Length: 96
Picture 1: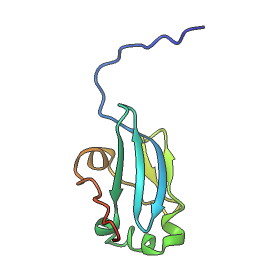
Picture 2: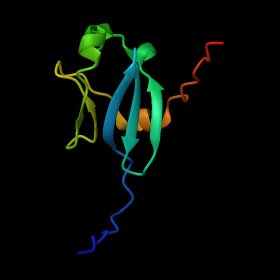
Picture 3: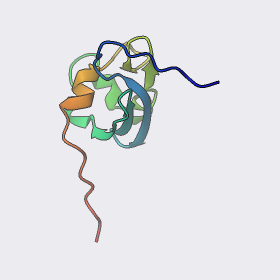
């Protein structure tokens, strides 16, 4: 059977997948097909995010498909619009 794509009103892109690469760098996939690698390190401040500076806890990130964004077990989450648009792509420093 072929999948029928229903044209819905344009909705902001939402997160569909997450993979932690190293440190606080993660690769995110979005509903519009965008794949971004972003570094959340600079954003991990404030009472909810500071615990996530522990790399073990940072890696507990999940996609909440209802919210359409990434969440952590401690209740932290990120605005998907910010994740989609407000980050500079990570530039990898090549070790020579």
